[in-house]
Length: 80
Image 1 (cartoon, rainbow, N blue to C red):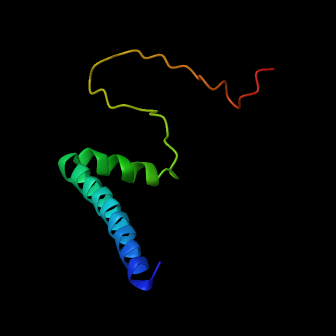
Image 2: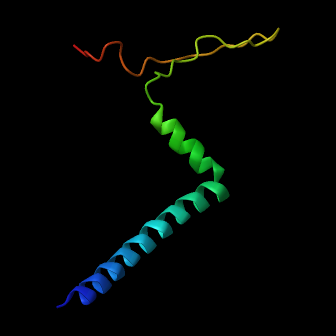
């Protein structure tokens, strides 16, 4: 195999890899453009360091209501 054939083979491989990378990026950008909730989902999964807290109080106005809540975690997880 001479140098020209090696260069042609390298160029073909480079072109194929470039086409795959560009197609992948185009699909990603298109999906974010047409489905903006996808971008929000991605960014919400990245920032998962904040702990969600339960709702302790709700403004109910002048209405009298009753509510019941349960501690599903049983405190500290020790059942004995």
